[in-house]
Structures are given as C-alpha cells and as structure tokens.
Length: 138
Image (cartoon, rainbow, N blue to C red):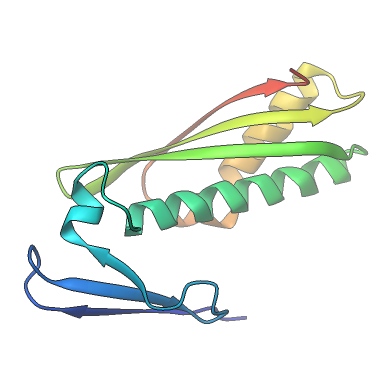
C-alpha cells in the first residue's frame, strides 16, 4: 500500500506560499505559509500540525487494536497530540489521551497505551522523543 500527498510552493521561504493536496482529496489545495508555520494566531495549516494529526490518529487506532486483542472495546478514545518544534526540528511528540473503556484495570490499560505509543507506525517513523499521558473513565 502507498499513500501520497503533494506540496506546491511558490516564491521565497519567508514570503512565498504553498498548498497541500492529499490523494484522498480531504485536503485539496490547502494553503500554508511561513506565517502559518511559525506564528501563532494565523489561520491555515502547517507540516507539524499535520504530523500531530497523523500521530494522534495512528496511536488511537493502534490502541483500539491493542484493547481488542486484550478482550476490551473502547466506548471512546480521544487523543490530542502536541508536536514540539524548535530550532528547525521536531523535538517531541506528546500524546494526551482521554479514554472510556469498561472493565479494564489501570495497570492493563497503562501497558496497552505504552505498547501503542511505541508501536504505532507513525511512532516508529518519528525520530523524536514520544511521551504520553492518559485518563481512564473520567
């Protein structure tokens, strides 16, 4: 299986502009600029935000599979991913999970979360520190 996305950029790094399109069409010519990437409060996307979405989605799906294999089904898993970007490098990915899963012990859940954190395909792809925190049935 292969997936793809296309980036188009015009102009200089700081004053130029670009757009992103995904194979599925979910993103279609979505704009991104230097300001969208490096300044707060500017509407638009950036590569780090897209990595955060990919990591949150991948981790959450892997955790669901881990729970299923252990005999549990989640009522709801909600993950926020914070990508830390400093000095031109991604230096961390922090996963914040809120979970509703019946009949699983905190110890077993912690084990399944750690496995998902270490083994989801996006975690394996990232060459950075990955951390997580979670709440169960809050």
